[in-house]
Amino acid sequence: MTIGVFDSGVGGLSVLKHLKQQLNNESFIYVADSANAPYGDKTEAFIQQRCLRISEFLSEQQVSAIVVACNTATAAAVKQIREALDIPVVAIEPALKPASLLTKTGKIGVLATMSTLQSKHYNDLLAQYTENVECYEQAAHGLVEQVEAGLLQDTRTLQLLQQYLQPMIKQGVDCIVLGCTHYPFLMNPIEGVVGKNVTVIETGAAIAERLKKILADTAGYTPSRGQSRDRYFSSSDTQHAKNMIALLMGLDVEVEMLPV
Ligand code: DGL
Image (cartoon, rainbow, N blue to C red):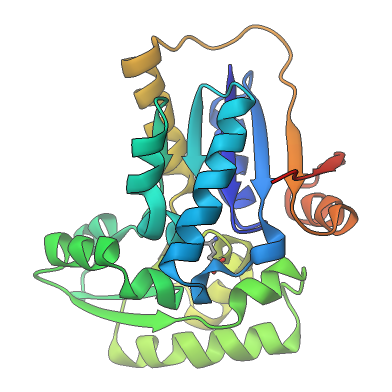
């Protein structure tokens, strides 16, 4: 079975890591739309158009399911993708529910793109799950660009993290939701800023569980026996994407130019 996975760039690799761990015999096609990253400051119409184009491309490669490994793309376009395709589409959204169940101080923080925080999709989640908690949101401008450039520990990245996280900590949050798939690659510096008493939540593992369940329910999934064969596409510099996959996943792969 082949699963399609896409993101505005390399952030979705943080989800792919978990997918490959939990469905280790399956094959994956990963698309990084890095020429258009970040999606977070694009219009909803633009994000929808790119997501539909990429989803159609993946569907043409005969994938059995698509994982939208991007919170911003989910918020803007998951409805349209589901309407356009007749295969299962698994989407990612900020972990507001787990965070509101976990918090002891009754205060949680959310780090996401501006586009996600302003979306109806996100605000519906907020209304559903955070009635009894105080939620401190921060649009983390600039972090996606830092991760896309592979600058995981540089001075600007650390400055941005201080600037975005310190105010939440001062407010007394004890759970921080990483509402963008690029941010788990900053887990070490994030934990350095927030300290040991704050739980930082990412959703990659939960998405892999959800995909397995959906495949079992809809496609009668049983694990493949053969060797998996993954393909990687980027809409930007394929050599840079190759270097980023080596840095972020420790894999030496070939990256093809995305033809759409
Ligand atoms: N990884 C995307 C997300 O989860 C990044 C969004 C962007 O490109 O701005 O939201």
